[in-house]
Length: 380
Image (cartoon, rainbow, N blue to C red; front, side, top):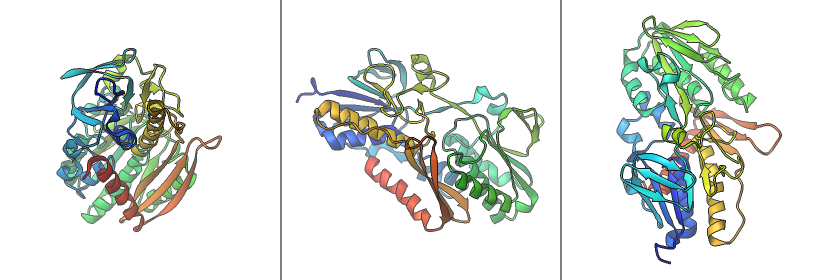
């Protein structure tokens, strides 16, 4: 088969969804397909690595995994900035060339809308890689006063992460002998830390109480007054702070908004097949409105469904396997212990979660989760 008549698949975004999808396509179809994977960065970062970097457990260099080692039959990974997406013609324009697709998959994830929360751009946040790297340098200067971990809106990536931040901040301050001089507040726009799993939420709330971390549910940070060091919540409550750790409002990247594919900040899809309303155009990961959390493990599951559909279409063999809405999240509880929650969003009438108590042993599971994907996706 010549390159002229190979099926052309263009995948936008080399995160969990894009890397898993292209790896599966390569494993199943090899060089019988022409897959182009496009990302504006030259490296990949696991979301959980930002907390490790922020609290000094890993260096910024260690969390950046270079794409240079990526080598998959049938797949080329290109560093490009996407400037336009035409979902009707499946043509993608970048700062260095255009790409036409028989099948287009948008896996560009979610970005942060700092302007949606007045004052947020003038303070600190820990959800972006630059923000976490900045916090790494700010934290040593925090020796007394109130730390406020404030989420500006939902949905947001990795729902347990703000809770993990609070517990890890407690450990960090204890290790430096500063905990008695500091207060920790956590504000979430959710009724509990992990709504699909009441047992997990109870365990986290108990951990907060044990560590004297104040938890405010069902509230979001509506604005930040940096001149007074005060966060204004959506019910009018003012919360003063000496250190602000923000979680910005999320939305799809501007290039996706400009494409007309998004509604209310997200791309509508069939939650089981990840098909958009446009022929042979799919969306996976944080930017797709599937009804599941915005987390890498769910993007990975969605990518498996799209891969099975494309393999079936291209090879003419087998049946697509639908997205099952299942994912496992590891949760840092502090003191070296890791908890785990397995969440199923689609099997029953409501989402369910199975909680595994935190232990030191589960850290090996989390480490394997990262190392196995690093090796399979990037050869590292």
